[in-house]
Picture 1 (cartoon, rainbow, N blue to C red):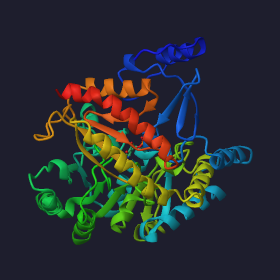
Picture 2 (picture 1 turned 90 degrees about the vertical axis):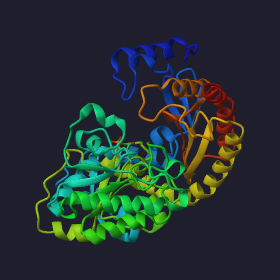
Picture 3 (picture 1 turned 120 degrees about the horizontal axis):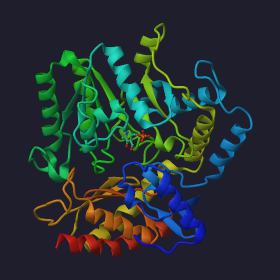
Picture 4 (picture 1 turned 135 degrees about the vertical axis):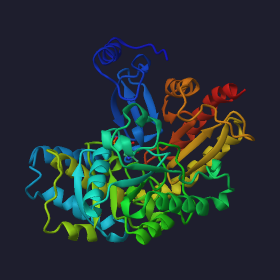
Length: 447
Ligand SMILES: Cc1ncc(COP(=O)(O)O)c(C=O)c1O
C-alpha cells in the first residue's frame, strides 16, 4: 500500500517499523497509516486523513472513539486513585462487579475475577473449571479463538495454535454448527441435531467423568461470525447438566451489545457456569477482561483459597472506564440500537453481496457481520482456503479499503463488518459503498 505521507507522519511510520514488533503481522507488510486520534466512528492519521472504523478496531471499540463519558471517568479516576492492590476491597472494582452481575445472563453470575484482557480471562476460566470439577479435559470448537497466551491458544481451534503445540494438554476439539457448509453434510435444518449428536458421541468416547467442561463462543467470532442454529446452545447446556460438567461461554468478542443483546447467549436464554468477557467492557479504552462465576461456583469457593491472580486484577482506571462504558450502553440505549442498526447493516450488505459473485454468504446478528468470499457460489469453493498459506487477495482487499478510508478486519475468505454501536446510517452506507467498489478485486480473483 503506498500513501504520500507528511514529514511527521513518515517519521511515526518509520519509528514503528524499526522498533515495534507488530502482532499477527508480516513485519514488512504493515500499512503506512500512522493513527494518532479517534473520534466517534473515525480514526485520523497524522496528516489528518479520516478512516471509517468499520470493524470497531478488533471488534472492541463498541462505543466508538473518545466517548466523553468514558474519557472523563478515566480522567477523574486518574486524579483520585491510580492503583489498588487486588487483595483489598476497592470502590470502583466492587461497583463494576455488581453492575456486571446485574446485566449477566440469568442474573446468576454473581462474582467476577478481573483480568487485563480476554486471554487471561480464558486461562482463569480453565483453571476454575479444573479446580471445581477435579477433571482436566475441556471440549472446544475447531473454528474458535480464545486468546494468544499458552493455555488460551491451546484451547483455540484455529491454526494460530499450530506453532505452539503440543501446548497445554487436555483440550478435545469438536465441530460446531456451520450451516453454510455443514461439517456433517446436512442441510441447515438438520445442523443443530447433527452437531449435538456429535458432541454426545465425543463425550462418550472421551469419558464424561474425565471432562471438566465445554468452552464455546456463543457466536463464533474471529473464525467467521457463525451464528448457531436455535437450540444448539440450549442443547450444550443440557449435555453439560446431564453429565455434570461446566458450560463455559466466551463472550470476549460478542459481549456488551455487539449482537443486539448484552451477551450473545441471552438470545437463547442460556446461562453459563463461567463466562469470560473483555473488549467491549471498556470499549477498549483501558485493558480489562474477566471471568464471571455462577452462584454455585461462588458458594463452593466461599471458604476455599482461590489460587490465581494478577498484579493488575481490577485496576481502578480500567474499572472506572468499565463503569462509565456500562452507563453509556444503558443510557444511550446502545444495546437496542445495535439490534435496529443491525437490520440496516444486513440490508446494505445483502444489496452489496447481490452485485458480487465472490460473496458466498452474508451472516451475522446485531452489528456483527461477516461476508464469506468464494470462488464459485454454486460449489462454495473458498476464495482463500481457511488456515491456508495464501492471504494475498485478502491483503489486497483490506489495503485498498484502507487507502479509500475504510478500516476493516479480515481473515482468509472472511471480511468482518462490525462498526461501533453508535454508527449512523450515513456512515454505514459510506462503508458499504466503499466495500462495493473494492469487492471488484475479489470478483476478479474468483475469476
Ligand atoms: C472469543 C475471544 N476470546 C478471547 C480473545 C482474546 O482476547 P485478548 O486479545 O483480549 O486476549 C479473543 C480475541 O479476539 C476472542 O475473540
